[in-house]
Image 1 (cartoon, rainbow, N blue to C red):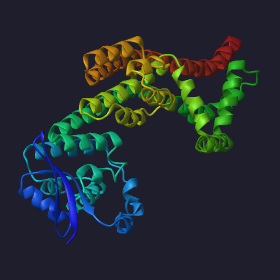
Image 2: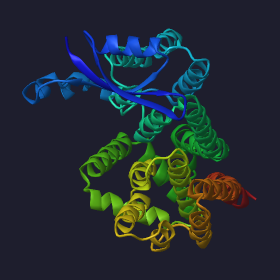
Image 3: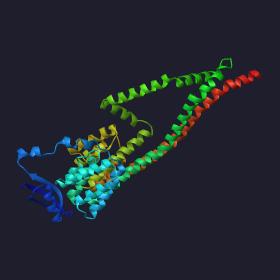
Image 4: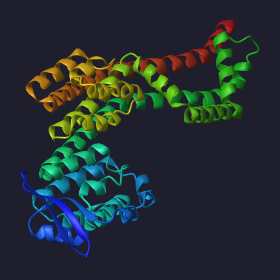
Length: 411
C-alpha cells in the first residue's frame, strides 16, 4: 500500500505533519476530513525513479489553459466558495455544489477538473494553478496563503471583494467613455450618410448650374466622389489589414516604445498611469497582508499591470529588494508614481504595515483616476460635438453657396 506524507491544519494555529498508508490520495483526504483537519499538502512517497512518470503531463492540461471565464462568473464563484468554506462544508462537497451552480459551460468544466484534482489528494491551490487563464497567479497565491494559515474563508472573502472592486472600476471607465463614444459614432455616421447618400444625388444639380463652383463646393464634391468609389473602402480595408499585420509582427521593443508614447499623452497618459499603479499597489498590498513573502508578492503583482512601460518600471523593484534595499527606496528610483506613493510606503515600513500602506496608495490613485477620468470625459464630449458640428456646417455651407450665387445672378 502506498505511503503518503501530509501537512494539515486545524484552525489558524494548529499544524500537523505525518505519514499515512492509504490506497490513494483520496483515502488520505477522507481520513484527514474524519479527523477534522484541512489538508494543506499530500505527497506520495515513491522511489526517485518512479517519481517522474507519476507526474501529470503538462499536455493533459493544455486545453484548460485556453478556457476563458468572464469576471462576473469568477466573482460569483469566489463569493459562494467563501460562504461554503465559512460554513465548514467539506471541500469536495463544496466544489460539487459550485460545479452544479456554475452557469457557464466552460467554467463548469473547469470546476469538474478541479474537483477531480482535489479528490486525488492535491491541494486546492495546486488545482487552481492548472487553469492560469481562469485563476491568475495572484488568486492562486492568496488561496495557498489561506490554506497554510487556516483562514481560507477570510482570504476568499477578501478576494471576492477585490475582484468586485476591480470590476466596478472598469465599469466606471466604460460608463464615463460611453457618451463621448456614442456622440462620435453618431456624428461620424451622420457625416458618412451625407457624403454617400445625400450629396451624390445633389451632385448633378450642383454641376448643372453652368458656372464655376466655389472652392468649398468643389472640395466637397471631390470628397464625395472619393468616398462613393469602391476603391476608397478597399484602400481602408487594406490599410487596416496592414496595420493589424504590422502590430502582430511588431517586436516587444516596438510595442514598448508605443506604450511609452501613450504615457506622454495629456490627461490620457496620466489616467493610464494612475489606473495601472493603483491596480499594482492593491494586488501587492493584498498579498503582503496575507503573509506572502515580499519578493514572491512583487513578482506576482507586477504582471497585474497591463501596460508594458509600467511593467518595465515595476520590474526594477525585485532586483533592488534582492540587493537589500527598502521597498520605498526601490520605488523612489522609478519614473512612475509620486512622492505620496514613496512616502506612504516608507511610513508603512516604519510601522510594519506595508500592506495597509499600499492599500491606502491604491485608494488614493483610484480616487485621482476617477477625477481625471471625469475631466477627460467632460472635455471630450464638447470637443466631439464641436468637431462634428464643424464638419456638418461645412457640408451645409458648401451645398448652399452655389445656390446663393445663382440667386444673386438672377436678381
